[in-house]
Length: 262
Length: 264
Image 1 (cartoon, helix red, strand yellow):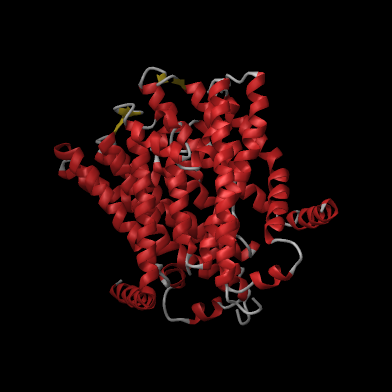
Image 2 (tube, rainbow over the protein chains, first blue to last red):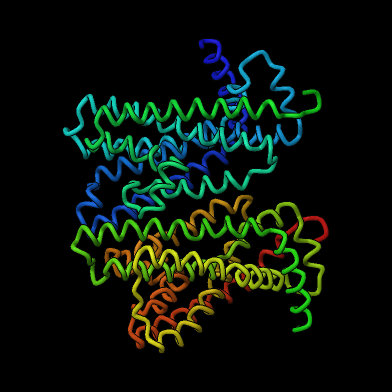
């Protein structure tokens, strides 16, 4: 475990050095993200100028949700999607051979080798919105809620990871699957509002097929005091199951990999 | 000129036919954001007893379904591609052709939007059924919608090109694009019908071109404005279109003078 943590730190540091070659680019990305997050908060404020609750969610709770949305979205494009995008290329070109030869767990290597440091502002701004929301929610948040929040957030990340890994594994059979990832990102957009807001078919899609709705809504529900320990336990069980299924599927896919020397 | 356009149309249709999956993906993007905001506003209306500032849940459905259609028809993507053409010097061979690059973009627009509209209408029909839509459209609204829509398409196209010309001066138009997109996100009527925004924001919205691209045709199509008001709004569209054409001519000329890739 410690070995993998050390490897992850090495990956992160090389990616960071690479990104620091383009500092101005980093600054512009930060500027863009400020615009994106600012206008999104603005949209929520416009809505709450007309109402005090949105399907039972108050404004501070909605801010928490929006913060979590950018945390999940930013975290996904920072940690998961860069490596997975390379993985698809490796499968297509047959260069996955080199990853397979390395003396470490292949799933770890293909999942975390690359990071997109330029997405760090997303995570930071998400945290900022989250904190602003939390301050306003205020005293209602107990220590138990905070723990449940953290666990639910981790479970959410795990769900998203499992989904992405399964999608990318499909590349072993279908080779070109960028479009599937595009569909994933299209649905991500819907996470900016609580999943209970949506009509039947969209809610089911967002919570089961593309679990982004769960990943964003569940942690925020913990803050809003609407998610008890039983719910979190169920969520964790679901996330573990999804992770296990995705890993199994990945190993299955790996067996049908035919590179230059595999 | 007509013969040239006919040839270009055929060529574009053939190339577009290769990218059918892209059509479906594009549609997903086109539909999902308005649906999200529709669902949110319906929740607001429900929390307020079924109506917010004259908009019932069914009016919101009408607004956002009309908006999706208008947004689809007014999409302008040239500014995204133009940055690469400038930076990599791919504009040079195009400038040698006897036709202004604008014409290729126009044809591309006609083909793409014309071929995707039918599947989009099918999806919008599904959405209309889900949200129990209501349109207050009178026949006169439909008559006015046609010029308003055409003006909006042209305006969006020209605004996109003006921003694209920023690539002559800036290495990175993407930030400029994001700035424009997010301004439009707030002020074009995407996050809310303009009438529901706080008063200062409404003033800004009507002073910028974006509302004349999205909100105006949308409100006319759903029958949300009186005929007199619709006429005023259409006049506003025409004024902005004229202004953007003048602006485009200026920045295009100035930009070409700066353009220094091989062959220019």
